Length: 395
Ligand code: NAD
Ligand code: MG
Image (cartoon, rainbow, N blue to C red; front, top):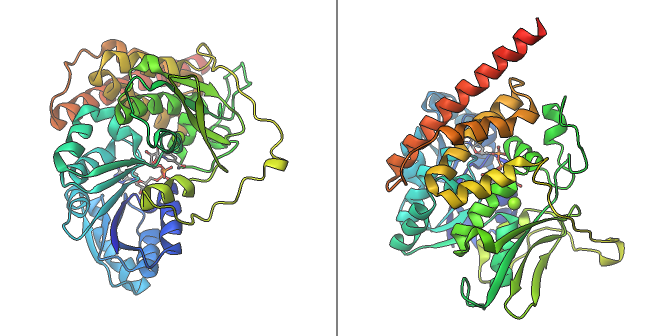
């Protein structure tokens, strides 16, 4: 039996992971599940899967969680606070940690799991974007294994199987991008949050959906791929592939390109990582090649989608930059979702934040968190300034 701690159980990746786990009760049990604040859905999960622990990261929600667990008849112990997240991520009874919290909020428990030598299934790409080498070194020092959940990185992991990775065997990694809901759009004014989160191929959390619309998601994934597979930015390309059937590719030294295909369903990469190196049923539908029609490809437009270029620049500049890029993006996306910032201004807030960051390379998680906090403060000020300017213009 493989005992799993699922960080971010109430989210989109959380739900897909629970679906795969439920298909294989003989293989997997849940040790712990976590959420930010939503106690009712968390208690529902506990009633169904009966994990040992349920954690709300907001400690003020602990009494409500206790109540909800009792009402749902779940035999689960309630815990609260960020320390409890890290505690369930490195508990000796747990073998595997699925890191599916959104944003830099997932960094500390993800690092704790890595240090404790857990098998770490990483969906929380922001953790590796912020911490870079610190996370990779923690996995190595802990003696565990890191397996990607992001569909592109799962695809590359599958394409590389058996190859001598990061060596001369590989020419380049090719990440595919759907292009998001605004692929063909030239005017980005007046875009609403609802339009931005309506992804053409995937149903995901709101933050990653906006990241897909700005192409920042692909930028974060380039940074993630660089750390997970040990490739310099020059050897990672992005191609827009609107059908989201090819999830990514590897080009080898001899010119051969290996691609991984499948229906766009996160249960496939989740099942791959959960069972690796075995293969199990994920519930994903088969690809029907006779109904696919054509697969098309185009270059991303760096002028319209500035976030992708900003991510490449940050990766070249180092982890202080990628941590600041991530923090500014989180602030800008939240402001956009709360209608305090225009969609077209997300990239500008990030760019201006980055221009003001002058931190040295972080050597500790505390240094990363300090860069994150500084960049957030700065980005919030930039958002507030724009908010004021636009309301004055309206008057
Ligand atoms: P989501 O918003 O649906 O769920 C986020 C989860 O994190 C929830 O359980 C929430 O309670 C928890 N959470 C949020 N803020 C928190 C905080 N401050 N402290 C502790 N917990 C907190 O997000 P999602 O779409 O499931 O994405 C999760 C992660 O997986 C992200 O890093 C995303 O980039 C990555 N990812 C998602 C998809 C997808 O299809 N949804 C695909 C690839 C990668
Ligand atoms: Mg992805």
